[in-house]
Length: 161
Length: 144
Image (cartoon, each protein chain N blue to C red):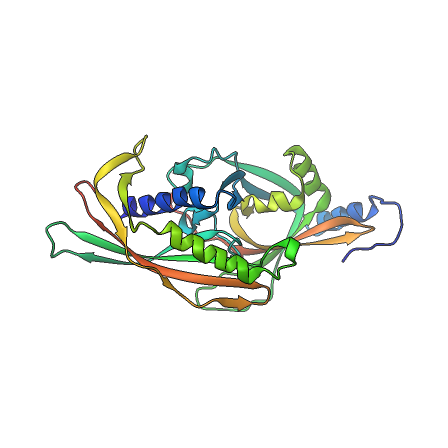
């Protein structure tokens, strides 16, 4: 399932660059697209604002098929406090913009599966695909608005995985 | 708290803080900071080993905060750090501010125990920081 998780993240990362190249984050001394995998970064005392944070939750396996199918639940969390120039009064608009970006990033609902342990990444035989996102309600905490979106990511296990 | 009164900045508060930290059995804290990130896909996926550097800050003093036990909760500590030492390291690493140094710190090691930074506060006098206070949480043991 790790190849599917990696491929899913890299697909969303590439799509975000195309959709909104200005959404970036300075992390570990490098400016990167504003999306990250929580489990691949140092622990956060507070999640960074205005970036998409991927968090992997549940895992299911269907063994009754010709090829084993694995499904992992992905939670995408993002929060914003608006912009400085608006004094944070545009935080609702910023949240809406991130909602739209996420919907665009998730389409199309599939991407080729690659093995990123190889250099360059090696294409595998199957695709990673996912279902429609389930948007949770906005949680407002003082000046900060956050939302959690959940979806299932599926992939067939290939030989050697 | 900052003092906005018009006075010439002097080094007395820093020297006094350093002397107090030393007299309180001042120890050495190691800030584990990430090296320059090449921003490869691999590093974002947790596939490559990130290079680390250890920044030495001394004198420093640890104090355990009032225990508030929770299931699975780790002890919390406060690390008092010399502002002069932090300023020296900020200058040596060519960083813009102490906040940048703390932002790139993955863990703090004191007496062989790793801690994670929860929050950072500072004390000022005459418009200058003389002490940094880091709220720390004990880190979990990492696999070898």
